[in-house]
Length: 332
Ligand SMILES: O=P(O)(O)OC[C@H]1O[C@](O)(COP(=O)(O)O)[C@@H](O)[C@@H]1O
Ligand SMILES: [Mg+2]
Ligand SMILES: [Mg+2]
Image (cartoon, rainbow, N blue to C red; front, side, top):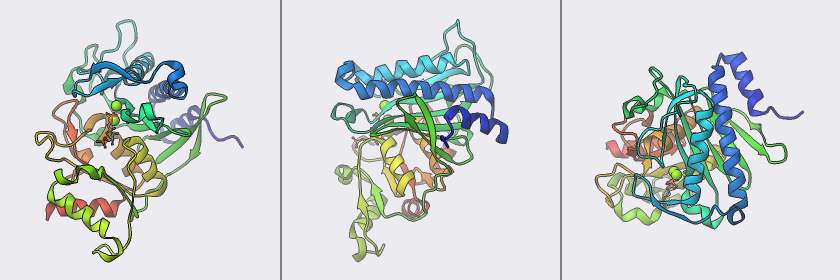
């Protein structure tokens, strides 16, 4: 039997769990954006999408052409659904309004249109991340304040990974579902239901080159993992680092593990590298819905009330036991 399409899956969710048809429209719009980005990624140099754009984003990072192209695709596709009254994107300093001629809807969308930008030009996995929040009251000009809600308020979250296959991961708060893009028909089809992340892990992901800048609890935790069978953990751990959060989270959903991007002393006023609204919160919602955990070393990420839309946060997410251990070391 042909697996359910994303649209059929969402209609089933409406019938079984009473999810909102407007949300369905929004998620289908996002999946259309991901399809378009996926096509550009596949074409690469042939579509002229590689290389630098010659500009910087609000975080002072160089923008790649594909960062900007993906941002434009996302903004247009999401606005067109009529399901939102504002958007926040990694690539745009202020909240983005829906154009006058389009209707407003009851949701807010936050997205990292292209995650793992340093992988674009070397043909390694990249992705897009999205988070959907309820809007208190729809208005034409969205204010930063509207988006400063803790991640536990999220209605839905997900990512699309542009790897050997294009895979969309989605949670509406009732488990995690994976959809693989059929390139021939242009349909996302349900290929894995109720993804679960084991409590224990045998694999960790962290950028080891930053070790000398880490705080003491992270140094302690990672050194124990590295000691393997001979250390206090009594077993060997493998390590991976793709340098795209989407790919790291996808690997953990598929075969377990823990991902860390701690705060460090390279930039002491920064709480970490990853952004709370459109990287850490949606990935935390996915992880928790798959039985994993997610903290900033001190508290659950989804309980943090943001102070600004591009706020950064330290991230420890994945296997619940490992996240508990490293969080415990921060408290010790
Ligand atoms: O080069 P580093 O510091 O290891 O960074 C890798 C991290 O940076 C990021 O690429 C940031 O994402 P963007 O490409 O959206 O800026 C994360 O996906 C990833 O975990
Ligand atoms: Mg990113
Ligand atoms: Mg990005």
